[in-house]
Amino acid sequence: MVTYRRRRRSFPRRKVCRFCADSSVKIDYKDPKLLKYFITERGKIIPRRISGNCARHQREITMAIKRARHIALMPYTTIQPH
Amino acid sequence: MRRYETLFIVTPDSSEEELKAVADKFQGVVTGMNGKVASYDEQGKKSLAYNVKKQSKGYYVLMDYLGQAEVVAELERNMRLDDRILKYLTVKLADQVDPATVEAVKPKPKKEAEETEVIEEEAQPPEAQESEEEETEED
Ligand SMILES: [Zn+2]
Image (cartoon, rainbow over all chains, first blue to last red):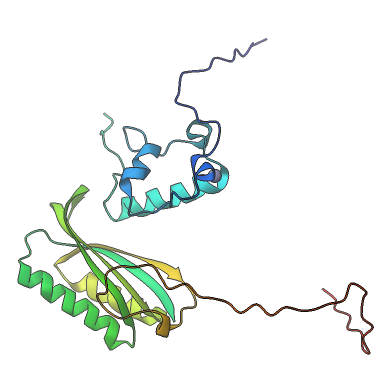
């Protein structure tokens, strides 16, 4: 039997969705400064189990990042995997 | 009318006159199709997250306008054919906008005027009123 050990990595976890906590923050594809908190160094979108976003706001973030990528405000990828 | 915004990138080697020409051209496309330009915001030269048409920089311009869907089609058709435009992205902001509530061209981007809705109060007595005819709606 495999025992799964719960090992919590020290990710900067957020218990509550920051957009629910502060409704004054608008999610906008024209705001790469905000969006870059939700991508990895390689430019991948961070899953919500790590970012702590709620489903609705994660959806909005994803949409905004994809739009920002399209208009070259954000990268599709940064480091070329070899 | 609908409200849209188009964010587009103009090639970085454009002169000031060329940027002006681009501004006149695309605002003209919108107004020529009975649209209304609410704002035209030149956001300056920025570096791109990846190269587009071999350029690593570009002038970002955000145009906010009202119009029917045909305006977007015509605007994007023109941008596609224009070598000065590296990329564009159109987003619909609202479905139903009364053009009278939006000021035309180059006012500084300000917040939309608050609309006060007249709420009609329905004074209903706590007891259910007897109506002469009862309508039954089936779903
Ligand atoms: Zn949320």
